Length: 185
Image (cartoon, rainbow, N blue to C red; front, top):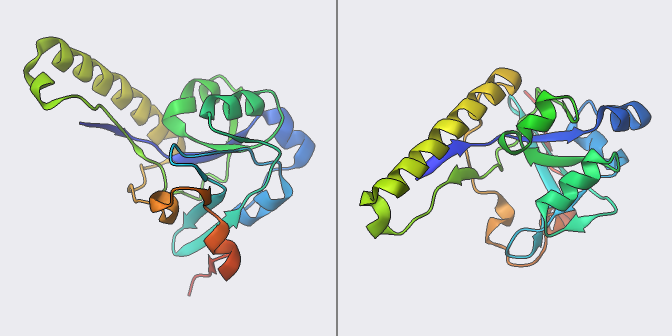
């Protein structure tokens, strides 16, 4: 059962942004220490796609950390060691209390996966499972609403191009073709 839709946001500590400058657009991330994660299938998620109206930018980011754990990347970012991209729902407490600062709010990324509850079909009628899933849905709906007030409407979920890849870098095909930048008009 789908519970919520996240929005990927680029964030770092306010101190990091003071020291290194705030990017105005996605391609400016090339000048930053971007910390990336590896998908469960093994793909390094280093291609960050963003859209603003009809304008699209993809940037192959670089940094000193590639982690299989989103939590390790988050700890490094909270320590002021770089920039990363997280689902707003997952880092909302850090954004709310000021530990993290999101940038480029006018750019959206449609690569955020939804939050879902997975359970066996026979568990659908189990009152405990139903109560737990309802609890999660209500909790995430509240956080999702707060994030929507802070960052705007939820983007439509779409499968990014790297989704079917099993290993390598998400940016590898983009690097061969060059960065994709569509300009309005």
